[in-house]
Length: 134
Image: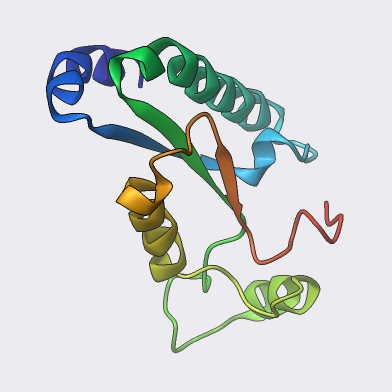
């Protein structure tokens, strides 16, 4: 991530481009037996914010999309299993995220309508975090 960001800066400065990282709600919501992952995601989110402040003067915006549970498990929308159903029932929107949910968030952050948004870690979790779920 650090390397890819560094090699893109010159091009993004010329094109007034944007960087959109993909992170996780685990950056703010700890989970048992996932300490290393949670810590890594927290660092990832801070990197996003730091790069936003460092690259903003060059005209480069940096944001992240922080995802909640993605499914359905085991990645087949036609065969939900008990884990998918259990998670879906807890999430306020009553389903797991789909790839389109994440893609639309990325498209928004890349669009001209989001030109004043930088340094943001956008939650795309169907209300998982708002509901205080573990």
